[in-house]
Length: 252
Picture (cartoon, one colour):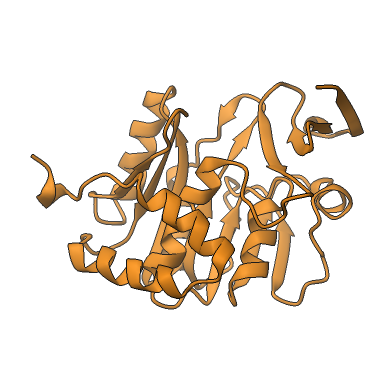
C-alpha cells in the first residue's frame, strides 16, 4: 500500500508527520509509532484497540459529565467522546501545533462548545489540572515512549478527580519498569487494585483506578449502561469488556 505524507512540520519539540496509508490517517512524531489514527471512511470506528479499552470507564462511571484527556495527539479520542457522549472534554497536550492538524486531518471541530483544549507541560511544577474531573484518560507518549509524570503532578491530578471519579492509563507492557512506577504513583492516591484490561495481540495494558475497591456489582452496573449507550460507543466498550481481567477477589 502506498504511503502518502499529508503534512510534515517541525515544532520546538521535534518533527510531526501526518501519514495516510490504506485509508488510515495517522500521526507520527518522527518515527514509525502511530500517536493517533482514524479511518475517515469509518469515522465511528476506533481503529486502535487500546482506544476501545479506554472507553471502559465511560461505562463504569454512572455520570461522566467532565472527562479529562491528557495526551491530545490528533484529537481522535476527544472527537469520539464529543460525538457519542454528552460529556464535556477537557484535553491537554504539550504541543499547540497539534490543534490545526486535528482539524485538518482528523475531523475534529475545534469550536465544539463542549471541548476545552489547552496546551501545557503537565509535568511542570505550576501545572494545574482542569478540576473537577469525573474520568481522566491518560495517553502520554512521545517519540521515545511513555512519559513519566512526576509524583507531584500525579498528586495534583488525584486532587482534581471528583468523588467517585476514575483515572485510566494506557501503558506499554514492554516498558515494565515504567508500568511498575506508574502503578506505585497512582496506587498511593487510589485503591491499589486497579481494573486491568490487556489488549490482545498488542503490548498495551489499560489500567483504571478509583478510590474504592472494584466490586462485581460495579461491572454489572457498567454492563447495563453499556447496553443503553449509542451504537459506536457500545461496540467499542463491548469489545474491550472481553479484555477485562478478573477482579482480585475472583482470581484463582
